[in-house]
Amino acid sequence: MVFMERYDIVVVGVGPAGSSVARVCAENGLNVLAIEKRQEIGSPKRCGEGLSKSSAERMGIEVKEWWIRQTIYGASVYAPNGKCVRIDYEGPEGWVIERKLFDKFLATEAANAGAKIIAKAEAIGVERDKDGIKVKIKRGNELRYVHTKILVACDGIESKIARMMGMNTALKLIDTASAVQYEMANVDIDEDRIELYFGNNIAPGGYVWIFPKGKRVANVGIGVRAPMAKKRAIEYLNEFIAKHEGLANGSIIEVNAGGVPVGGFIKDMVMDNFMVVGDAAHQVNPIHGGGIAEAYIAGRIAGNVASDAIRKGDCSAKTLSKYNKIWWSERGNKLSRILKLRKVVESLSDSELNWLAEYLKGEDLVRLARSSGLKRLAMILMKKPKLIKLAKSLL
Image (cartoon, rainbow, N blue to C red; front, side, top):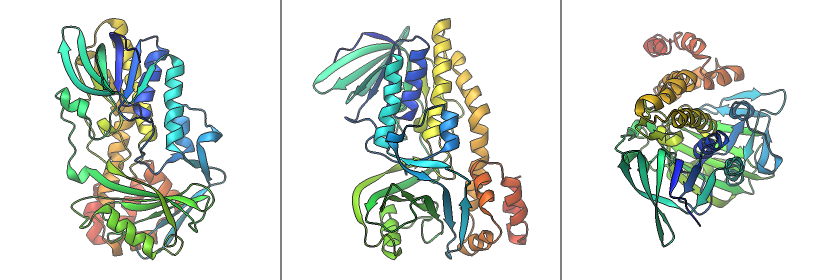
């Protein structure tokens, strides 16, 4: 594979964030290289693979049948005592997708816009010079240096590139979920609804999900967090499956695990000639850990800001900080409100969660996930005197 010596933009990591940055910059006429250290874009996945209709609309992408596994018409949310709060939509509300296909679709869109995408190529070093950053890339036995005016780190929660550049993106333990997911076959589930299970004994600091992927197939996963979790995530997941009548006899055909950011938003995501985007910048909905749309939208913002900076010939942190301003205005402040919700939910005992489930309706849960129902939740919590202080944190 032939690398050019100089690029306007080098993107490290070709998930939704990296593909978005690469596509926007290429569409703006820039010379773009995007590299992915794994040999297959989209694999392994760290995701339940859910994509809502509103997320696809905000991303501005055309939905393709070939990366959809199941259309979703509703959701069932379970309290610790088994009480179910149902969400029923009038029509399709979203999809469970195949990430291996979806991420390749996004990368292909970036490539078709003019970006050079190269898998199994790893950035192993960075070095500043007077007009940008030199990136050391390893691909097989080949080592190459390429120069870029702006380097964009889209390399996930562990972002090695941010560390190499001297940016501290470390997450607190409380803002990191440990997640494990099985793709299971021969399961007995409702195939057009997602299911979510909450409880401090079921999934402390998180929840269990069942996302159907077609006839008798589903993603079954869990996210838990320290210090609430006293066991490994996989132990909680195995216990849940063993007790679930529709899952206990199922087969495991794929296993995925990893960390998921659920908070710890970064105020300043830029340095001279450098930006962080997506999971690397913790741009994830903190109540459910979904990051596909957040990463793609942030990538679009970052790509446009980077393009403007290169056109102006000024790639300083001051110029790139426009990305901070726009992202916090459009997404960060809203996600911070949702973070308040996460902190309230994780403070409730199982008996309080059971009590709350008696008051909540499906539409309340939808609004809460979008940060617009916090006042109603606060009013409900105030019915219990011991929860008044917690309720006020939402207002």
